[in-house]
Image (tube, rainbow, N blue to C red; front, top):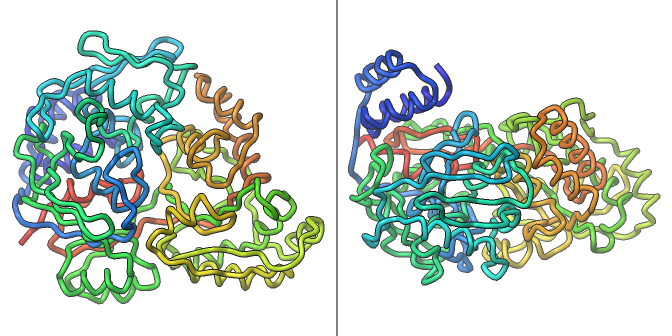
Length: 529
C-alpha cells in the first residue's frame, strides 16, 4: 500500500471521506479495486466520526499589519486563516510531498514540460453561492503574476508566459519547462477567488470548508462551517476561532486551562512541563522548516564574504539544536534544503563550529567594532535566547555581536527583509526549485539575504527544465554550494514543528509540508467531547 493510500485511509477513519471519494482517489493512486475496497471497510470500521463544536486556536504569528489579501499573506496566523476559507488548485501529500488534486482534479504536461493542462473541478461553489469557473482560475493566476499585486507567490509564478482557458481546462505555457509545475501551484498565496480577487481581494470569499465571519488583524478571526463544501473529509467543527497569541507564556496558559484547543510554536524548553499536563498532547512533526540568521549581501558590512564566512563559522550548530530546539530538530548547513526534498544534494561537507576559522575570516574582512543583530521572540521560538547563545559563541572568535530585541508587533514589516542582520524562519517549500525561487533568485521579492548571482539564477532556470534527474541533482548541488559558501544565510538548524493540543483534538495530520499540519490544522481535526 502506498503512502497516499494510507493517508486516504486515515481520512476515512477521521469520518470524513465517503466510499465513492475514497475509491476514486485510491484507484487513481494505483491501488487495486480489491485492496481499495478492503482498506475502506477496515478504515470505516475504525472510524469515530465527530462533527460539531467550536474549535479555538491560540497562534503566534499575527500582527496589526496583517492583510486579508492572500497575495500579501506573511504571518503564521494568516497562513492558517487562508487555509480555512480558501483552496488552491493543487495540494501536497502530507507524507511524501507529492502533488495531489484539489480544485484541479487532474493535469497533463507536454513532452517538454513547458505547457501544462489542468482539468478544473466542476460543481464547486464559492461562499457567495457563485459557481467556480475557469475564468475565476485564470483571473486569480493572472493577478498573482502581476507585479502590482505584490504577491508573495510572484517569484514562483512569474515563469508563466501565458494563462488561458481551453474550454473548461486551464492551460499554462511557461517560459521554459518545469517538471514541478503542479507543486508550485500549492503555494499558500494562490487561493482561488471569484474573478481572481480583482473585485475585492480582501473579501475572504473562497471555496474552503469555513466561511469567515469576522477579522481583527493581530487579534482574532472567526469562521462558520461552509455547509456547501465540495469535500466531505474536512471541516468537522461548526465554528473556528483563531486568536493571535504572540506571547509564549500566554499560549501555554491558555492551552493548559482549556481556553484554547491548540497552540503553535511551543518552545522546546517548555515541552517537558507541558507533557506533565494530563489534558495536553505534544505534536512534533519533522519537516522542511528552518531557523535562520539572515545577512543582506548588498549592505555593509555584510557585503564582504569573509565577514559572512566568519559569522557562519562562529555558529555553534550542535549547541543551538540542543539548547534552543531541545533536540527537536537537526543541524543545518547554510543552505535551505534537507533530506526531505527530492534530489537532495548529498555529500556536502557539514560546516562545523570553528572559532579559529571564524577569527581568520573576520581578520581578513577588515571589519572592526560590533555587529548589530536584531531579533524578536516572534522570529522563531527561542529566537532571543538563540541570539544570545550566538553572541557567546562569536566571542571565542573575537567577534562582538550586539543583540537588539525588537517588539513582536510589526517585526515582519519593520525588521525582516528590511534590516541587514536579523533572525527569521522559513517554513520550507514543496520543491527545491520553489524554495530557491522564493528566497534566493535575484529577482525574488522575498530574497531576504539579497543574494544576487546571475550564474545561480541561470542554474536555477536550467535545473527547472531539466528532465534528467541525475543532471538536475548535480545542478542543485552546485546551487547549494553557492548559497552555503557565498550566500547571506546562516542556517544553524532545521526545526521540528512543535505544537500542542488538548486531548479532545483528534485527527491531527503530521504534514512535512509546513507547520500546523501545513496550515490545515483547523480543517483536518475534530473535537471529541
